[in-house]
Length: 167
Image (cartoon, rainbow, N blue to C red; front, side):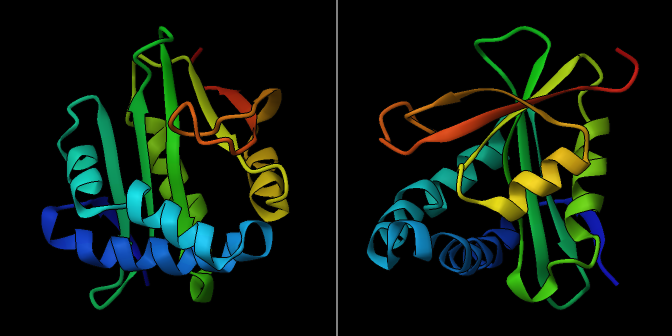
């Protein structure tokens, strides 16, 4: 049984391992293992994860069963858009997908930002499983970008948005 809780610095190594495993399982077929390794090394470096953990306007959650981290989620208030929270990361270990972990993490993240009216995210156009998940959770496609994540990645993404409860 997994419980969703706030991540701590002690979780970051396990979170990093989970991200590596999940990224390779999801993106190797799209970008190839080398590119995935390179993106994982820069986007999920210990320093990068630690910075996310320290961000005051964010929530960094993990699903923990006492032995293993089965999933993680990270969302933060947007600096550019008012009343908008950006879902930056929502990943579930390949061996624990389809157990409701993503849904539970997502449900928790939705309640963490009382000032936000919209949740926004970017998703790889070929990641059908993620697109289906987000659509099932009320997101609609509102656009696309050619530079997912950091502004010059050269990686395309669909942009999805969802109005948050109470707005």
